[in-house]
Image (cartoon, rainbow, N blue to C red):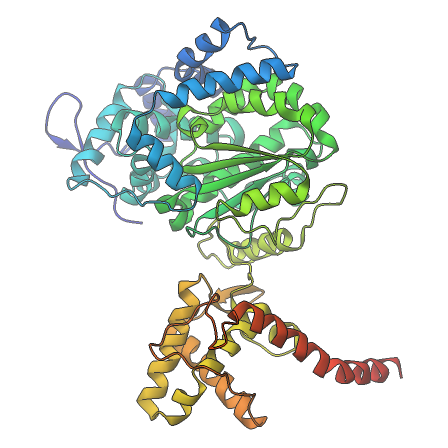
Amino acid sequence: MEPFLPVLDSDSSVVTDTAFTDMNTADILEMCDLLAPDTTSSEVMDFVARESNVQRDKTFQDAGLSLERFPPSSDEADLIDKLLADELEKLSFEEKERNTFDLYGMAHESKDPKDVDASLAQLELEIRKIPHRKAYEKAKYLNKEYVMDKDFRLMFLRCDDFDVKSSAQRIVQHFEVKLELFGDGPALGRNLLMSDLSEDDMKVLTSGAWQFLPVRDAAGRLVLVICPGYRDNSVAMNSHLRVEAFFAMSFLQAEVARRKGIVVVICLIGESLLNLPQTFLHNLQRIKGLRSGGVHKVAGVHFLLTQEYLRPLVGGIRWLLPEKVRAKVCVHFGDFEQVKFKLQTFGIPTDCLPFHPNQPMNLENHLQWIRSWRKQEEKGKKNTADTIVPHRFDVLFGRGRHTTNHTGNVRAAHIADMFRDKYEAAGKYGKTAIAERIVTIIQESHGRFLKWEDDTWEEVDQQTARNKISHFYRNTRNKGGPSKSKASPSDGSASFGATSSEGESLASVLSKRTHSDSLQQSPQRIQKRHQRDD
C-alpha cells in the first residue's frame, strides 16, 4: 500500500496528521467516542438507508403501494413498472445513452479529474462532518495505513464519479457494515479473507447461490450470478449477509471491477423462492445498509424469470435497488432458452451459466474458484474477485487429453495453422514476431495463457505465451503437420469469426476439426480403456 495521505484540518487549510500516537487502547477508544458519538452500527445502517430512500419511499406510498409487503398481484407489478418508466423518462439524454451502452456491453471507462489530490483531501473533510463514524475511527486505529491508503479511497470516489459527499457517506457506511457483520477485530482494518467466514458462512458460499462466471462479458466485465432460489434456508440470515458482504468487498481487489463495473444476473428459479419475499422484508433495513456501503459500480442488472407469478416479486426487488442501478435493469421473461438468448444480446456468455430449471446447481467452476481463492490466501498472495477459472478462449499449459482438447487450445492451434506458411518461411526474429501476433489475437478476444501452479491457475508472461505458440508448430511438425489452411491472412489479422477463402467461418472449421480429432483419437481411447480393464 502507499503511505497514508495527509488531510486538511476541518477548521483550516493546515495539513495535519490524524494518527493516534502515544495512546493506549482505552485512550484511543475514548477518542473514537469523542470523534464519533456512541451509536450502534445497526442504528447507523438504518439511518443511512432511511435518508437515502425518503423520496423513493414517498413516491411508492403516494401510488398506493405498501412498504411492508411485496406487490401481491400483477396489477401492482404493472404500477411499479409505470413508476420506474416515469423515473427513467426524467433522465437526461446523456444519462440514457450511457445506461444503454453499459447494458449492451459497450461500457465506457470514467476518467479521473486532473486534481485527484484535492478530491482526496476534500473527502476527509466530508468524512469529518459525519457525526456517526465510530466504526471508521476504530478501523483507522487498527490499521491507519489501510484506511488512509490513496488507492483504497479512490475506489470510493470512482464509485460515485468523484461526488465527494456521497463517497464520504459510502466509506463511513462501508466500515459500519464490516463492524455490524464481522465485529471490531482485525477484519475491520483490512480486506476480508475467506478465513473470516464461519462454518455456516461457508455453507452459504459453497451453495453457489452467489458466484462469478468463469468468463467475462463482451466489455470485459465481471459477471456475478445470483440464484436466490438455491439459498440454504437452514442457515441464519446473518450468514447470507456476511457472504454477500464478502462478495461485494472482494470487488475492491479486482481492478477490472473498479474500472468498468460489474454485471449482475439474477435468476429466479429454485424452490427457495417461495420464502424470499418474507426474508427480504424482515431484513430490509440491513440489506439496504449493506448495499449502500458497497464499493462497486453496477453496469447492469438482468432478471431472468420463466414463471409469470414471479413478476410482482421482481417489481418489489427493483424498487429496493438504488436509483442509479434501477435505471440499468432489464427483465427477461420466457422459457429458459428464450431468456438465455435475450441475455446473449447484451454481450453476456450463457454457455457456462451454472443453473438450469429443475436441475441441481452446477458447482464445478464455483468450487474451483473457492479452492483457488483459499490457496492464494494461504500463500499470503493478494486475492481478487476474478480469481482465475479457465474459460473457452484460454490456452492451457500441460499434458493430457483435457488440455489438448480444451477449446482454447484447439482454437489457438488452428489460428497458428493459418500462419504456418509464413512461420516456416521466416527466420528466427520473424518467427518471434508471428508468434507475438498470434498471442495478441488470442488476448484481444479475452483469451489468456494459463499454467497450473500450486493448485491454482496463473497467467504466464508474454515470452512464455510465445513459446506456447512455437510449441504448436514444433508439435505438429514432428507429427508430420496438419493439412494446410486454404488461406493465410496477408495482413496478420485473425479472429474467431474470420473466414477462409471459401467463405467458411473459423468457428465452423474449428467445430469440424474438433470432431475430426475426436474421431481420430477414438481407437486410441478404446485401446487405453482395454488396458485399464486388463
